[in-house]
Image (cartoon, rainbow over all chains, first blue to last red; front, side, top):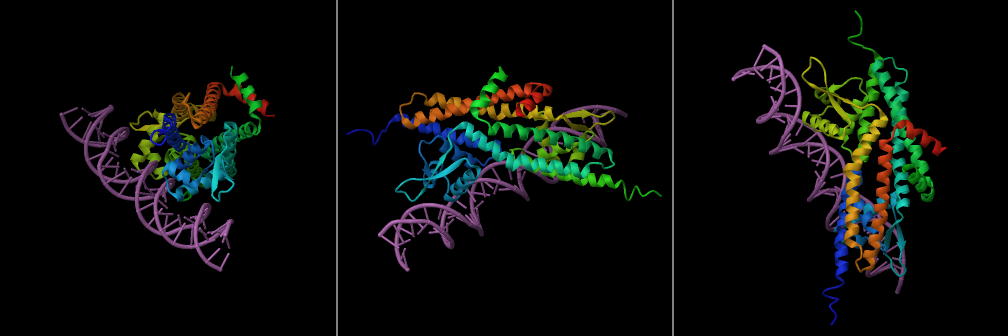
Length: 180
Length: 180
DNA sequence: TTGTATTTTCAGAATTACCTGAAAACTCGA
DNA sequence: TCGAGTTTTCAGGTAATTCTGAAAATACAA
């Protein structure tokens, strides 16, 4: 009898251990960037999976509840980082992540712009509008600082737009050349 | 009698209202980027203050406890975003923020590189080392994806290093030209 | 329609992160 | 050395977030 049942490919076991550590740590890192830990873990898991996984498989791999898995999967779809796929002959939904790192980057940039950078610009412009011309030395200093911040954030916004809309093959050579 | 006591410069009151909203909202935005809300608020407050503030003044402005103010002030100093200054004739410590937006940006980039990007690179390299050459198709795919991620993060790290070490006056014109 | 598989929802539980306030430690002039 | 002013610490409390699990809703094949 083959020992596959009791002792399958040992390399697979070693791989699993590394993958699990990767998923866990990636989740922790996500936390530092304001991303829900579980959401980052699911994303990590799908990024390194060769095939699409069902909600149940994700629940099992990460040892989380159905509700938790479901919500974070929906959030990831909302971010555009994963998509649902159908497997023929299966009624379940399966999920797969975009694997291309440059595309992932562009997606994250686009969403963060929309969710956080735009609101920040709105806030700053509003603050400037409402304090511009006030007769108070502190107010004058405030407006000046708000304008500096606004200008900077708007510039960052433009740069990110350009970068995330361009082709990786166009930008990378530029950067590498410039960085030398 | 002048009505200064009962009705001081009304522009100052309007300014205060806007400033308070700015500080509050900036704190909320910080949350989305993994930054403690109070820390972001203190930073916002000091960024738009004309003079350095004491711990007690910060406590009063933000209505927070001494311990909370103290800890977050120390964290901001740890990030290099604010510094303590001495006022002659005063025993208290006062704090002021760097106001130059480009310098703030460079400081944040430097710290985030150190605290999060470097550890991410460490994790990825470790995962690659430990799965390279394993005889398992999933492991091969994992290693490949980890290499892509690692390459990307290392590139981002280099770019950020270059940008944050360069002069604003050198980078900005370049960016603006490139973006046109 | 009916039964089964699957997804979605959400109230309450659990966890985590954050904050408070008071006491201890420290600083420094007198 | 003393004492008032100031900073630091931290045990315990609070608030915010995240997670669970079971029930309800939905989808679909027969």
